[in-house]
Length: 532
Ligand code: 16G
Ligand code: ZN
Image 1 (cartoon, protein in one colour):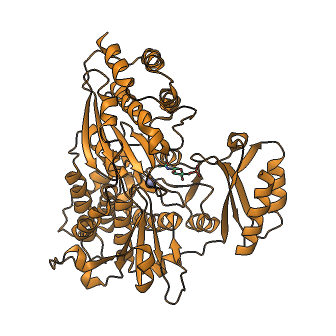
Image 2 (image 1 turned 30 degrees about the vertical axis):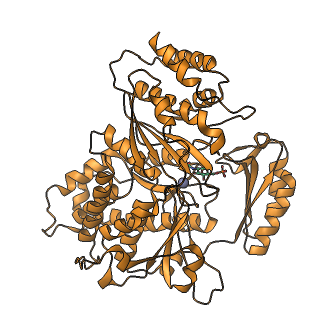
């Protein structure tokens, strides 16, 4: 009774926009801020119910996108720290679109019953709230020599102010949603990156310390550990230089004046790509994308596994299974490269939730989208075997190569965010590996050469008319379209092409690859006409 009244009265303050159909989509509700108020409120309710169901802490994140500042997204970090269980997405859609408080209440009652959610007051519902309001910012690290290597803490001091605060349209609304469930508590974690919130949720549910300070401490300590256990690592002497002495921040337009390696983080810092500006490039940049980050990580981890598997230490251990996960957007040259390394390459549809899920099937699963979303996942049982392997040696002692490799892999598992792709932890792992290899960004970029590619989007009346299968590489509907694409693609040497409905916009996307830029563009244009 009390619950029903509370919900009806608080819901009546946030009416949904008329004539708009909201969908949880690939990764949360995304719309202009002016349309999202009631959705943000209702996602608060969703998070509280999810906390009740899973008996764990849940996260709720509001982010700005790399598009307009008002283009916002609201999403859930599930009990594992990962994306909302797909099983709950239809309920999320229904909640967001319920036309009135009465409908909303009805939906909730039905769902609580169907899911067997216990509302017995035995569990203290808690939702962690996070918010990011930033624009894409470019960071630029000078090519550092061994002697002036930045230590982790210097990077972090430098990175933190990157999150700019813009107008807050929502600040109190998610809290209203959460507390409309009797007894539920919303804890405001403040301005965070998306991956920080995911990390916190995971940490809380594992009974670990979970403040922002703890996040930085974990990154910092695992980064220093990497320094200690890599043979060619940093001088690691603290010269007392602060961030500003080591790095130069610059906006995109200013990058050209520096010879450097640069890293670009997206608006909520869950994606990273590197780039470099070749001298006399007249505006050209060389992009080092998610596929190359994946390749670098795979190369390094494979090397460590080969040490681990060496000699008799391995008698009792099973062969470690390492898998990599890509999407159809991965440049064909990267897939070839990974296969040359004799790695198992898997494909899933676009969207972190799919890649992440696949990556959990391995002892070590590395996943990346070309656009920079990705991370490296370690299975619990593999971590345990690494711990067993390393607990006999201390850092000072001379362990075997196998033991050192185990220490390095453990450090990687602590450094790289296990909940979700995280640009900050990703860039630290890139930096430490480049340092270890003694590679410049150019050397890294030369691992393989991307095939020329082209992406287009086609505005269509109904994007759901295009249905795909096989990790979005084959169209099953409308009939005949795939055959037409095949016929066109066959005309181009090294041609590859696919179309898929966007999960975030009302368009169908076309991707084409071929041996020359011109051919890739012609192929993309021809296929776009087939879709139209
Ligand atoms: C979302 C996804 C991203 C995917 C993109 C594709 C997450 C966190 N984000 O941004 O992984 O690449 O959608 O967009 O999952 P599209 O469907 O419009 O091409
Ligand atoms: Zn992002």
